[in-house]
Each structure stands twice: as C-alpha cells, then as structure tokens.
Length: 466
Image 1 (cartoon, helix red, strand yellow):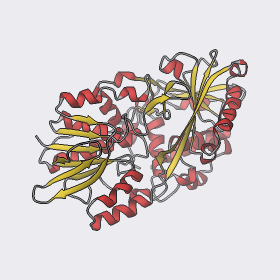
Image 2: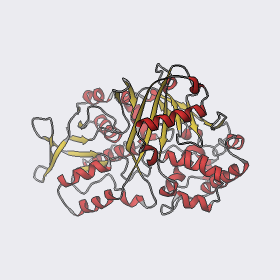
Image 3: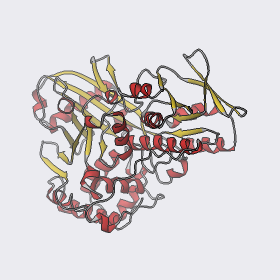
Image 4: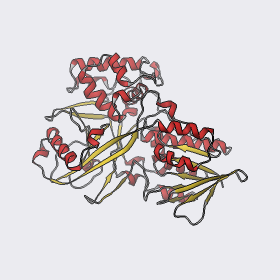
C-alpha cells in the first residue's frame, strides 16, 4: 500500500488525508498541537471554563470543497444555513439583505432596494457596481478593490456599510489591500450566481467537534493520527525514492512514499531550511516572503438574560462587524454571543479590558436589552495570523500543489487555489495536493469538487472568471 505522511492537521491537511485514505492510501496525519483544526478550531478557555472557537468561521454555499470534506467525514448536517442577513444600525434599527424567489442574479435585488440601511444614492451606487461586475469588470488582478470602487463612483454609505464592512471584512483586509478580482469572486458567489451559492452556513457545534470523526475515519482505512508531534527533519533517499521524517515523540523515523506539507505559509517558511536546497526552493522562499497576515478578533460574552432574538447579524458603523448568537446556533446555555471584528490591527492591539469594554458599549447600542443585563463572564480572542492578505498581484506568490522536490506536495489556503484566505481555499488545496499526488503515483483518482453552476438567468449571462 502506498504510504503518505501529511504534516499539518488544519483543514488543508485533514481534507487531503481523508481523501487519500478513502482512495486506499496508507495515511499518517501529523499535527504538532493536541487537537485538529489549525486556525479553525476550538478549545477549552481556562478563563471562562467554556469551549470556544478561536474565531467564528462562517461558510457559504459556494464552498464546494469544504462541504465535500464535511460530507466525507459525515458532519455536513451540523451546519445551519440561512439566506438572510440582518443589518443593525446603532440605535437598534434593523433591515435585511437576502434571497427572494426571483431567478439569479435578480434574487437579491428586491431586498437591496428596500434595505433601510442604504440611502437611494447607496442603492444606485451598489447597483452600478454589481452591473459592472456582471458585465465582466473587476477582474484585473493588478488593480485594488479601492481603486476600482473609486472608478465606480461609490457613495460614502455604500463604501462604509457594504464594501468596507461586508466585503472587506469577509476578505479580512483593507479595501486598498485587496485585489479586485477576489472581491468580484465574493460578490458573484454571495449575490449573483445563485441563492444556494450565497447561503450563509454556521456550525451548530464547536469547530473542533466537526473534526471528531477524522481519527476514526483514518483508522478504519488503515491510517493514523499523531497529535503533539512535530517534524524535525525531512530527508529524501534517491535510491529508494522515499522520504524519511524525524518526528518528535516517535521512537523511529517515519519512512514514507509521499509527503504533503499542509502548513500555513509562515510554518512552511520555517521548515524550508530543513529541505534539500535547489533552484525551486529559492523561488519558493521569495514567494513566501510576500505573504502577510491580517488579524481577526472576537469578544465572547455571557449575559444573565437574553439580549437578542437573532441568530446572526451584521453590525453597522462601529468597530464590531458581526454578531453570532451561539446560544441559538450551538444550543449553548447561558445567553452566549460572539462578536467578531475583522481586518483591524488597531482593535487587535487593544488590551483585554479595553477591548471588552468597547465591545460592551457597542453591544448596548445595537441591542438595548444588553444595557441592563449583567455580564456573567467574558473572553477576548485575538487570532493575529487569522488570514493572509490578497493584495493586487498576490497570485504570483501562490505556488501550485507541486513542490520543487520529488514526491512532496504542498497544501494550505495560501497556495494557488483561485480563492482568498478561507476554509474553502484550505480544503481546495488539500484536494488539489491529493490529486497531484495520486497522478504522480499513477492513479486517475479525482478529489476536487467543481464549483456550483450558476442558476437562473446567470446560466445565460455566463460566468466571467476573476
């Protein structure tokens, strides 16, 4: 049986491991921490004695590969779906975006036109920008989203309440640090291709619980999982055409036919000096040096009473961007809400007390019930390496799944998947690495899940790739 060692137990590594194990490979999945999930995981927070996600990771219906991975391990039913977005202004006024029964791309238009959060000028601006994307504009990978929006003459309200909030925070970066091609991809997926593609999905269990079936899944197929294990060295034997890995915590070296390095770009950069030097490794070093992180912060609050009846909301005009009611989404006790702040290094730099104080002040503006409620406990999570940026020209720094070394492949949301830094990009990278490995092994196995096909009128208009 062909053996594969996969280094990294995040979404990329798990998706590759489960796909290859399902296809008959002998898989060893190696994770340096004591749990799976990487940046999309949960853990017991000692300060509040609660299991919390390191940050809320929502998904959309267009995440075909992530959903394929969830189906493979049997947890697709643990995702709660909605096609409605509630937007709340300071003071509590609510309005909505979402799908109607009209055919795509018109399905979101009625709610946009009646959305009280946008003025008439905002709606005209947004309609003009959406039409431009529909007609093929916004695909130049050398142009920033900010520059493109200024050319589209977007109103202040459209910029602040839609582009900077909904889109820039979804891509977790500033509008001038986002390639417009990636923003166009998000617009098409969320608002144009179909209501199914734009549906919002949220886990009904803590993130790490989603991955609970992985060890048994691998074990039932002859594989294994090594936790609290890190790779110290990798050596290629040209004679045997195999890799030898020294794994901390293991008594003997791990000898394997293939290796998949499913690591974040900064972890890959640290491992590079332990790999044989060659011309390709020099290029890879240059590519890795171009990537930068953007943080995501989340404030977790438990109240002595219910402060909102909503499951999820978009928060306008303040530092906080998103509210997730985990008591409703995950059936958790204690009136527990999670507040997420994306793409701001300023908020991420605040000390704990100041960040929580600011969050409580803003929550009271959106949900008046919170002003009289007592905070039972609170936690602040800062994921300083939450995502990598997608500025104009970043595609040149995103390598394919094939590495410069024989029988070694790469996975991670930062490789060339065509997607920004998302769980979908991670799952895609895992499936792409698995397919490249299988092809090298002489197999025609396919693991990559194709994109959803546009529906309604979008089938006639056609899809313009970013």
